[in-house]
Every structure is written in C-alpha cells, then in structure tokens.
Length: 246
Image 1: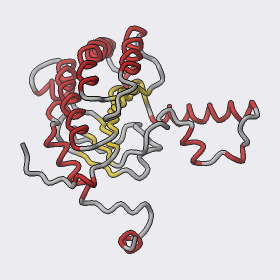
Image 2: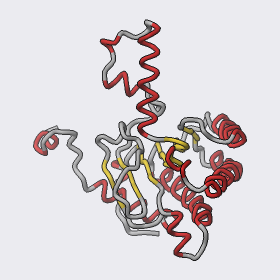
Image 3: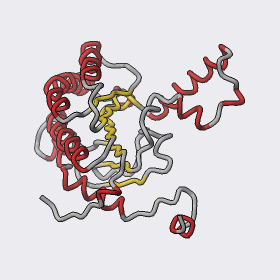
C-alpha cells in the first residue's frame, strides 16, 4: 500500500479531523456541493477503518458546525438527509469493526436524525475498539459556554464551591470531557484555521494542514500526517533539554 514508515508505539491516541473541501471537490468535478458531501462519506469510512487498524483509540470528526446552519437551506436539508441515510448504512460496519459511536453537539438536529443517532450510539456502546465521535451542530465556543452554564448552575445550587472552579473543573464540565485531548489535529483542503473546533482541547495539539480535499483524503494521506506528527518534539512549555532528560 505505502512505504511510509510509522512507529506503532507513537501513533497518536486521539486524532481529530476538520473534514473540509467537499464542496470545492464537487465543483471541480462539475457537480453540486452535495455530491462532494456524498463522496466525503467514503473518506469517513476509509479513515475510520485506517485509524482503528494503525492503533488510534479515538477519532473525532467535525461533521457539521453551528455556523453551518447559515448555509443555503437546500444544502443543509440535503446534508441532514445524507447524515440520516449514512448512519443507517454504516451501522453494520461500525459493529463489525468494534467501533463505538459518540455524538456531541447542541442538539439542533431533525428529530428523525437524532433518533437514528441515539439508536446507533446505544447499539455500539459496548464496542471496545476505536471511539468515533461525530461533532454535529458543534462549536468550541458553544462547548465552553455550556460548561460555564453548568458550573454556574452548580454554584447557584450550592453543590459547587466557587473556590473549586479551576481549569480541571471547567474541563470536566465540557460536553467532550469523556475524550482525552487530541494529540493531532488534521485539517484538509488548504485552509489554515480551526474554525471553532475543540478550542479548549487543542491547546497543545499538533496541527497538520494539507491541501488535499476531504473526498481525496485516504489512508496514505493519514499516514503522512502521522509520520509528520512523529517527527515533532512535544514540549508542553518545557525546553528540549528537559524533555530529553526524562
């Protein structure tokens, strides 16, 4: 398949991906944007299987942001229908590959889609392999705001002392608190921003940007990102000398 060398002992435990470029990919093919989203589903399947195969434990995909609701109504409706049909068609694959599905977002989804997602989450809850998290109607600012709201309610009710509100407390109240912080964040399509994705959790993530559009992002592209990640020294504010002495 590929001669890209990956150290199996240094594969990032948690990989997060901003899947970008479906619309531009479709336009290059002379098609409407929704066609790109449909082909992007194939990349989701390939990358999920590849991430599990190489030893990652968590894969989080930015599938639909809170800002995406501002897109043309026809595109949003098409995306919701595509998500609904994809959950149905991919459930057997998730079960076969021992993948646990999780969903995080503000809940602004069509009820039929929410019901299908909930069933898929429940049916895969006992799987022990890769945890695949879909960020749907999600934003990093929403998540931080939600954590602050929950903390405020606990302080108001007297169950939380304001003196105990620190970074660990805030992190514990995040809707994504069940996930470790991602070591590697990948963004496809040549854009150099995180677009309101996992703002808190990516404070010390390694970023990898590629011009490849999401429908063309395959296992080899994933391996290139991981190989690049493995060349880096993660210091977390310390010096190289401190890291090497450990």
